[in-house]
Image 1 (cartoon, rainbow, N blue to C red):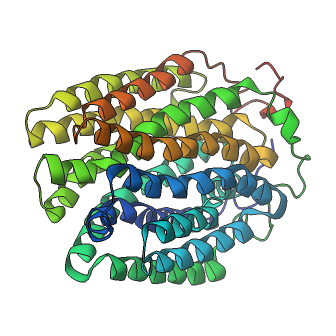
Image 2: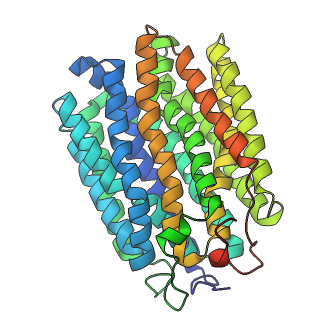
Length: 413
């Protein structure tokens, strides 16, 4: 088994820490729009459907860039792709603060998605470059947990900045923060030590047509699509739901949003440890159980009579789906040859970002059609959660961490 050059040194933890910081700031820039659309929709007189289109325009280009960014990271190493991504998304975050109309927001958010779209799969490549196979689930779970920290802080910080300084200033501040991150990466981010990529000294990566023959990748893509329908749907519309339907102010809404995310953070870390230590080869059970918990909790959330119960059921759903999504995203790092991790991860992330295209607009359309009621929108999320439950039960992982890595997986595996 190929062991990355940095696998036995302290350097891998510096790489992981920097990647976590990147994910947190990534979520600052990504999630801020979900808070900002509340004052933006008032300022520009937007309908719920138009708001959904603004939110979805980002995910369309973001989805397109997932496999492209992963393939580029496989070929050139993760560092170059990550640096390019951070600079681009930071500049377009600043530009978002200058938007003057509905159409300008659509265009800017689309370009923003192109800039940010390479980061997820490139960061997975960086983990594969820096960590041996038997540590990758824990490393990836730490990265995934950083997204929950980002979503917690993003909602609270964005609500506070927007409330005190206006949504335009909020985007400019967050974009400048991203440019500082790019400078930090330029100096300190060197995944795999002195080597530029995992392909050096390793076998050639699988051609895309061979990757597409691996059924596990298609199943993981479908699973991630279903989970992401819930994640992006909730992230896009729960701020509006809590303010408009539950009548909270924006700062209170941001504070309450941290509770499900904090519990999800703990779940993700625990899941990564279990995947490396206890559940090798049994990942499908964790995906199915987590998804079933999500289905029940989302149904109860849609019927909850009080704010306290809304937050409680949202927290339970976050715990279940947090376990399922961590399992899904770590499987390529364990069961796909390191030289093809970027392309494989990019295909799986593509499914999640396609959900990001669909969920905000579909939920906005349903809310508008049902005169401001969120009930039908919640049922859409419940139906989406059934996808990882049923597909997850059909997973059959390839060789485990102690065996030959599955560059050798058969097309029907």
